[in-house]
Amino acid sequence: MRSFFYSLLGYFLTPAGLLALGVLDSSLIFFLPLGIDFAVIVLSARTPHLFWAYAVLATAGSLVGALVTFWIGRKVGEHGLTLLIRPSRLARVRDRVSHGAGVGVAALAIIPPPFPFTAFVLGSGAFGGHAWTFFTTLIGVRLVRFLAEGGLAAIYGRRILVWMRSTTFEVIVGALIALAIIGTIVSGIAVYRSTHPASGRRAAVS
Image (tube, rainbow, N blue to C red; front, side, top):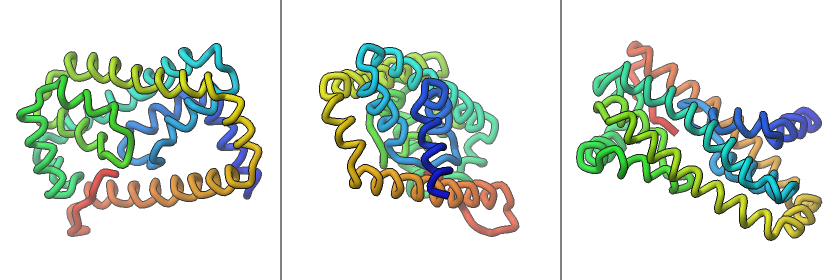
């Protein structure tokens, strides 16, 4: 089982895996706080001269995932949103989307987890946000975030690589993988229940 987990981690720490992680990171179900940031940092530490390429790949993946989430929000509308987002969070999303416009909401993408950005992507789609403005801003903000992380990792890469060979790193990786599995299962069940009114429960977007 341990070898499987590390094989999975090894896949995500590749260019293709980074792109896939970016897509999953902006989806409704997958749950791994700071997972995409961690991958950008590690890959940039390994090959510093390609830090900019990793930032581009992470941004591209995030864009694809956000496009799907935005489209889902547009399809389910405000009524469907009440089944996917807790009432207290929905009120904040509605207020921000109504008064913040596309640029302001998309700019929130620079804030790392646990900020619930996926909920705001859904809300922007459901409440009729301007797609072009939203995603143009999203691309710019995410690219700045990942370039900054990758650039710092490229500078301090040797220290990061040494730390990766420590027991502490193995413990953290194990905890992150467990968190991702548990969080993804919980999120998947929540989304499933939200689409089946008979369950009588509302689900929250992670």
